[in-house]
Each structure stands twice: as C-alpha cells, then as structure tokens.
Length: 157
Image (cartoon, rainbow, N blue to C red; front, side, top):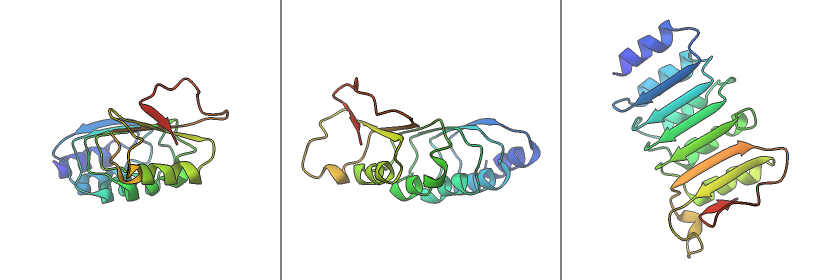
C-alpha cells in the first residue's frame, strides 16, 4: 500500500487534494511530504505508525490549507512540529489521536491569533487536566478575539 500511495503522489505532480484511510505506514507519509508539495487539502484516517508520519507531512510544506486527521497515533510532538505552518492554514482538525491538553496549550501560547479549541465529551475541569488525552482539536486562524458562544464542552485555550 505504501509503495502504491508513493507512486500516486510521485506521478500526480499537480495533486492538490488527497484523502487516505487505513493500512498506510509512516513511509507513505514520507512520500507525501517529499513529493506532494502542492497539496492544499489532506484528510487522513486510520493510518500511520508514529509521530514521524505527521512530521513528514509538515516538513517543507507551504501550501497546506486544510488538514483533517482521525484515529491516527499522532501526539504532541507531531502537532508541535507543524507550528511554522499553522498561521498559513485555514484549519486543522484532529480527532481520536494522542494529543494532550498540555500540547494543545503549548501551540495556543506560541501562536497568538490562532484559536485552539479542545472539544471533549466529558468534564475537563478535573485534576490532571494537562495530561488528559484530547477527544477533538480544532484550530483556525482569527484576526479577532476567540468566539464567545462556545458550548460548555468546548474549551478555548
């Protein structure tokens, strides 16, 4: 699967949107990072093996605008590796990954005008909140203050 994915990304030089799901390792993401330079929209689900996969996607990327990630093993270090790109992106959505509130807060503190929303099914006001695994993360750029109409299960960092 990785080699087939690599062949697609290498052959389709003008590829701007891509959606992948399952059975791909970090090698496929390495191909994506190396050859998919024009990708503006990327959707990934049930793929990769470690943080290295997302780091490869972020590496050398200048046109990535929309990134959706579901059920992948990416954690805080992978998220933080994308810091140079976040102002240029429209949004980043991550759900069912291995992100902690601490990692999300680090991104929020290092990038003013980037709204970082943590969406939880349960209560986030418990002890050890910083180590808690985030259900969903939604980040987007904003020139104004973060929204004030967030429901109780959304925490804006």
